Structures are given as C-alpha cells and as structure tokens.
Length: 386
Image (cartoon, rainbow, N blue to C red):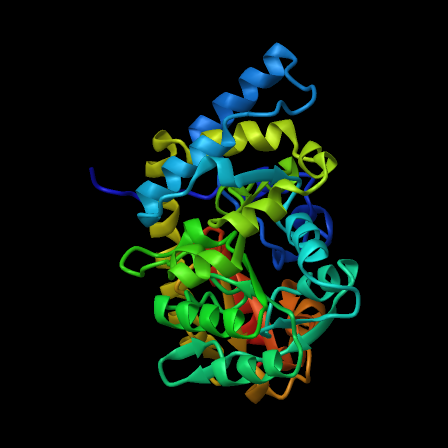
C-alpha cells in the first residue's frame, strides 16, 4: 500500500484548540515553538477515546491497561527490539519517569551528564532528583552531531554517576549510532555509572535510518541502562499522561520494581487508552503518513531557508518534527527568536534554553501544514530586507 502524506487541520480549527501551542500567543502569531503537531489523531486513538467518554470510563488506571503488551509488539514491529513486558512500568510522563529513576540510582549531589544543546527540562529534572548537571556538549562533525565519548569518559572519571541521554536527540534530531551507544555503555559500566535514555522521539525516526534503543545496543547497555518512552510525542497526546519505564536486566529491573506504587498510579487512564491505540498495528499507516509529511517538511525547510534566509545553517533531522537552525550569522543576538517573535510574528523555541550551545539558534516545529511553514520562513526572511 502506498503511503500518502497527512493533511494538517485548517488553521482556524487549530486555533480552537486550548493547548499551549494555540493559547500562548495572539492570533496573529504563527506558533512553531512547543512540540505539538497540527494533525488529526490516528483514527484508532479517536475511536478509543470516544468510546471511553461514551462509557464514562474516566476512573483510576488499572494495574494492566494493556499498554505494556501494546508497546512490546510495537517495538518488535518498528525497531526489531524484543522487550519483556514484565520489565515495564508506567507513570505520568517521560520526565517524571526520569526523575523517579534518577532518585534511585544517584545520591544527592551526584553529577549527571547531559549533552547540550538538549531538551531544556533535563536541567530541571536532574536537580529535582537531587543531582547536579554536568554538561558534555555534542560534537558537530562534517557528518552530523555525535556524542563526545572522550568528554563523557572524562566526566565519568571525574565522578559523574549517570548520564541522561536523549535518543533520538532533541533538538538536533540526531539518531545515535549503535556503535556510539555501545561505546557509551562500556564507559558507564567501567565507571560504575548508569544511563537513563529518553526515547520519546523514537517512533518518529525516518525510514532508512536505523534507530537503536539504548537497551538493545549491547549486552552491556542492557545491564547499565534504563529507557523511558511514550506514544505522546509521535501521536500528539502529551496532555493525556502516560509513559513507559523499561529495563533489560535483573539488577535494573529490581530498581524499577522498587519504585513506589504511587509512581505508577500517576499514569493517566486516557493516556494508557490512547497509548494502546497508538501502538496498535492499525495506527502504523497513520504513523507512516506522518513520517512522509515530516520528510517533505524537513526538505521544504531546507529549500525555504536557502531562498529566504541565506546565512541560516540547518541539518535535516534524522527523527522528529523539530528543526535546529543556526541563525548566528544574521546578527540577531544570542536569542534570535525574540526578534523573530516581535517583528515577524513567528514564535520559535528559544535556542539558549537548550544551553549556551544554543546561543544564536532557534528550534522550529515542522509538524504543520507546508503552507504554514512557508509563510513562517517568508516572514522571517522579510526581516532581512532593508
């Protein structure tokens, strides 16, 4: 069956939404900042949630809402990864899962590595868990972004007890190679450290690019790692609250099972219901269509920037619907999104929020209609006209 692109909802309909993307700025602003997409849900999600509302199925989340088995089947289909459902627990969202795991694998004051530019909440969740952030920035090479393994080794040697990995990486869209993940695992094991891998963007890996779950990178990775993921990013259900915490070895599973029951009680029932529908085979066609749309948009952005914003530096992401763009050459300061919002009425995510490595950068959400993306870049380009 041939795949066709998804059509974004009309912008007038989108402005009826009450989520952050559509209620933060005035109606004359094009919102391309927060990680929400502009498409109707996969039909299976809509049907499952409509049925739940019709039945008044709005109570407490049961011990087994079906999300574990649904994810196990999804991971096998999409990644060739075999996951033991007995090694999965759920919670409210990915960052909550990260915090709860870190609390059990580090001591107060321990340093936890991040790899900026990186998802801003990492800098909040590590202190929440009692840790201290230690940054080892990604390395930009001629071929793309990669982990600085030598820098990570030095941080572990200096006493860092864990690394919070973003795989695929937000905001660059980098899918880390199996080789680099396996090497990271060996470093962690050698220094008695652990790896907590945020893999929420993994369903959005483009066809032809191999996503390697950290726990599947090697036997060592299985021993030292924890993964946290969700359907919420790919299927636009962040408000429904359901994430999965996954392990692959006896020691790490013991830590997972030792989490308080309240951690799992925080799972949203609608999140679990939507997650089961998201990970079901009948949603694969919708996901494939989304990936095609995002592929077209990531290429369109490259074309539009070259035409309208010369000087912009942009690498097409391997995964996700977020584009990391360097506007340093335009002379718009450390946070060019401020000028763009004020003068072009386009809201982009502030680059410096991702670390000092984000100075001069913006993050653009391309999970929208192509005409919206075109208009946004044209508005930005108009700022270059004397």
